[in-house]
Length: 235
Image (tube, rainbow, N blue to C red; front, side, top):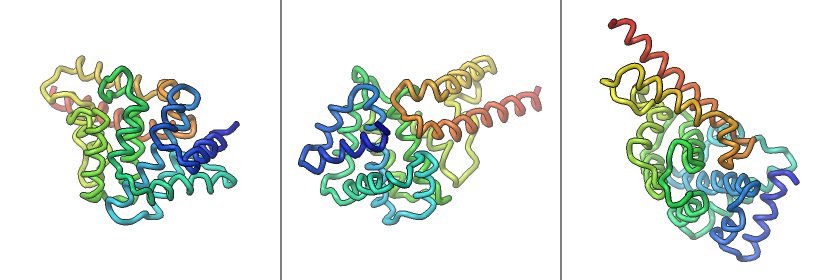
């Protein structure tokens, strides 16, 4: 059964009156976690669309870059989006249900957390049109807090995505400018390891969404190259 066929089954339960939290509870274990991840990205994207009051063609294209949706399955994706957008429940309720679904032993959202993979997808979609609306920033900051993502981790992710300035390479890797090169190299390697597609799939990110890793990996490697070049220039 395809990913989108399984999503259709989950949608059927929602249409029959089951709550999002109950449906997510059934999707807690692999391989169903990939269904929950996809629904979570679509649902929170729909809620985020209300933050800046519009859904642009670029944002739709960005979503398609993350998820390859067969033409026959497009109605299922649209139903999830519209259901979340029209639901009277607020985005915080959705975010809490998703957090309960993916948190492991109550640990906060770390670099190797599926919740951070989900945040990465939301950032990717929110900045696809080359703009980053203050409403989107407030939305993502609140979702990150509900997910248990530490402030410095949120700012590091924001630095990789927000198009209003060139990201500081030290912020991207989450290290101090005063750190020695060996420590920075260790941080870079840890980021590369956690961003590997195989690690993401093992966390419950569907294969259709591993493209999230491409932009993250590019930013991580660019930051490392910039730091090395700057250190050599001042050696």
